Length: 98
Image (tube, rainbow, N blue to C red; front, side, top):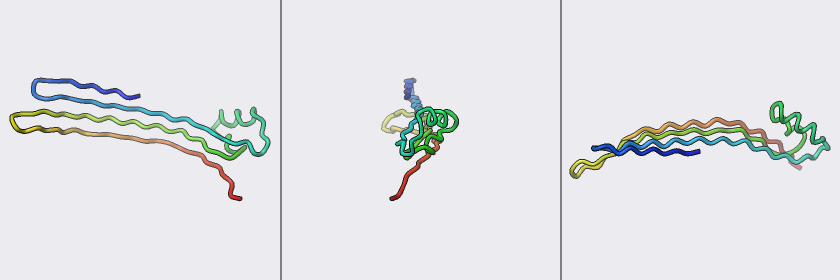
């Protein structure tokens, strides 16, 4: 989700851009004969479905916001602002080397 707000004032423009993204993804190859019920029960608890096969599980989110001020006076054009970003995530991967 991304939002942008622009406010034009007499002497400057204020811009705010905010974004949020959440990813929950899971892919496993059932290579040890676990039943779908066993895998679903393990995933419902803590993404432990990887214990039953090879693959990855990811749960992550990203948030960012930018505040920007810009304007022009005579021959001077200016822009200033601040940016904040935060990423959190965890990934579980299980693989086999032959």
